[in-house]
Image 1: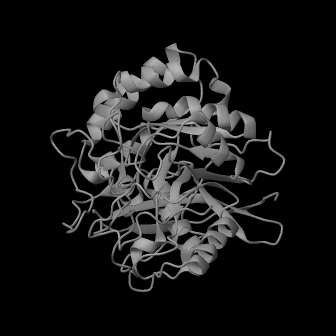
Image 2: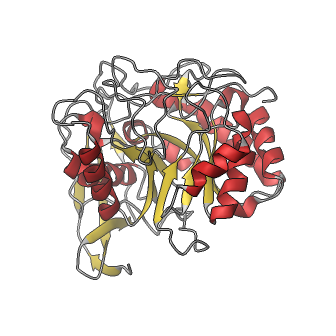
Length: 402
């Protein structure tokens, strides 16, 4: 779908709220053996991108003033700290996979970031940017090598139901069922997943959004990734350094920024020229725009289900509003939603009810709202995961292909 461009000259003020209590998927990860704050942003010269029907796709700001911030209000339940932790603890859970080279230790996927309270008023779609041409690096482009693919991505976990590693045959069999996506996201380097996914993704003409999970072992994990990639950098669109590390309190902002710098040096020396980012919750990025500035684009996880006040059909609008808030807080940077979805079974979270029908409605809403710049969570149910008090018994059941 081609987008038209409307230029609007205006001064728009957006209030970005302080961190709210939220829940997330805790993607357990394994060790690799080698391994508000209230913010006011003022912008002028707004560019609203619309489709041929006049429906807004996203907005960008030109010459946006730097945000000013005050100390954020405190929050309870796993909320994002207003100030970065003084020390960097090794990540416990976050994206897919973590534990040891064997089966994952009770991965509790962190019920994803989304304020538990809907008192956060979403920014209107015409007021805050999702992507901006002012960013130093463009957001990932859709792969053109697969005719049936869209601009959407999908996440993938390389573990069997018992937590053991999937072999190449199993991974390739899984990928044979994944259709209509231009990119696949993985979270770590254990289980030989970079190599197995690389082989399967190449066969499907898909790009890879790879991940370094444990930033405390960034050099070792990067070397593992480099070895597995074997110079096939053209398949890699983005490499993430950390997933929700600041939100989880497992690393300080400065530690994440430092790890990104280390990874840039090592990956650049190995010939990688793609995007490098850190992924965190939209709340963490709004409170810590330094994470965006260290990245090539703003990479945010956002799940409408964990808000509790959004029904499945409203998932697209909710996630779009969070993407706009992130972009505004990050000075108009290109913003990609790196994880979002809806569970097919489990307990309800107020208005958010898991079911197959609701999952389909939520995914349809997300796909119709975003023509690109979104990665859906997740390809298959993760039966190796464990629930916690904040996951509503849904942790295993976010898979869309079953």
